[in-house]
Length: 275
Image (cartoon, rainbow, N blue to C red; front, side, top):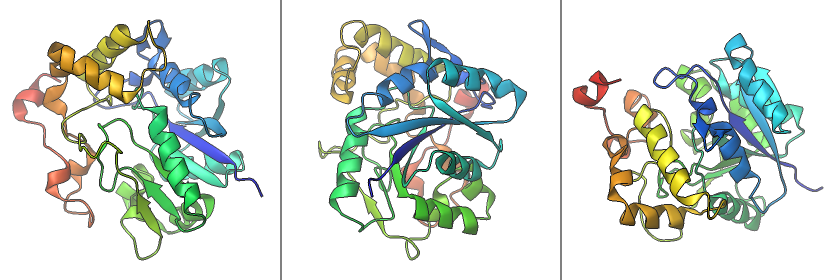
């Protein structure tokens, strides 16, 4: 049977730090549209679905998905594991990719490389990612799991962080799942030094600057082009560099078994006071 690969894009308007971030404009299109445009560049045959909440505030995301010709599932606001599972179920997925909606500059080649690794292994893995440990610049997050794996996590996960962040039950329980990881082929580790994701106003300014510099001449610019630009334009690199390495792990170091303090950074009070 041919596998059906479904990419689930989790998106909502209610970000506490940067509300409405997925609908912010990048060269005349929403950030979500720019991200979906990049996901359409994946070489493997994939189906996209936007998974948002039933909240009225997220009507605009459902409308954007429809305008872009992408399926949309609406479910729980805070149980993202359930939202992810239901969206995958709706589209009859056998293989599920989790891509957060705050990765508008994700390199399609990172997704293809992960899929090639996953399928080359036959049925050796239930779950693979490029995050455990992470090596790519932050914002190239790829997690791939079988539908059976996602179903098992959906049935067993109970902790709030497992429901809110979708996959921790899987990678926190390696004795229950066959887990693999794919490293960035450069051999480098930019996961804590380069930030291509969006959570703060500075992240938006950074992403906007990169798109304005690269997109007009090469719509499908890869990660290497971004890195070259940042070498030539340290002023762009500096826009959100204060937040490099900051991620959600910092709030849960006492609860996570497989994550240590070296994999996250804490925001300083001076950073916090401006937001």
